[in-house]
Length: 159
Length: 164
Image (tube, rainbow over all chains, first blue to last red; front, side, top):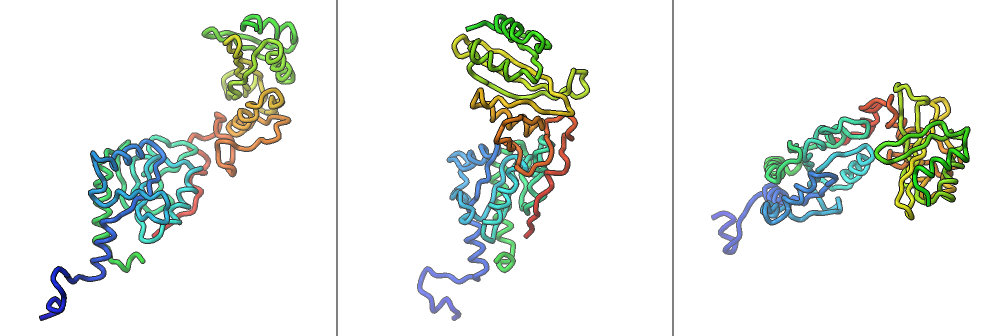
């Protein structure tokens, strides 16, 4: 009866859509754009105490070509913004972005002549984390929210 | 090697008409020299009085504070032999913000002059490499001037936008 009767023991059937999304969501490789104190909390999230590898995101990729999740952690000056944009361009689709902390999200306390007022002015941001800096739990929550987003979107939406 | 008091006396003795003021605060002495003679005064301090290190070269903007001129260029000197600091200041008018370069005296001077030009727009005559050092190369204006807007002139929104 059905396909299962033809298959050996231990195999199962699913849809390609579900399989790819399952793979994507459990292996989000972050590109750490760490430029300030939020990056310290990001590093703490990767340590054994908070252990981001529980969610499949421990493989930090310093090459944007191998990453699919950008974590902007820190204040972005207007001299740094072209660098950030170039790295964002180099990341292959599907790609996601977390804006970590007050400075990356809205400029924070740095409302000055040299500071970008939120990276979402220039690149698309999926999840914002409030805090100055946020605790590692905040970053873990953001990664889980990205995972939920990945699980609920259509595979064909991102090529 | 001279103490700071002896150094002030030596500078005044050498340039009696060009020293326009002096002062002391917290044990640190400074002397105001006219900007036409400031390089010669620095050379005297370096060669004769033992201040062999230029620790910092910067400027102050005295906009609307009743100062003789708007800008003041500050040279912070240090004597490695006698462990003494000394400060030379010179007034720079707003209409002609130009000072002679000190890059022939110290190798560290071009860096401070580049920063001072970047931040205050003060030109250093004779500096061959007066490029921006802190701000992006295409940045308009000199942001540490007191009349520069605190939130900029819109430079921070001047980037291409990416979308999904």
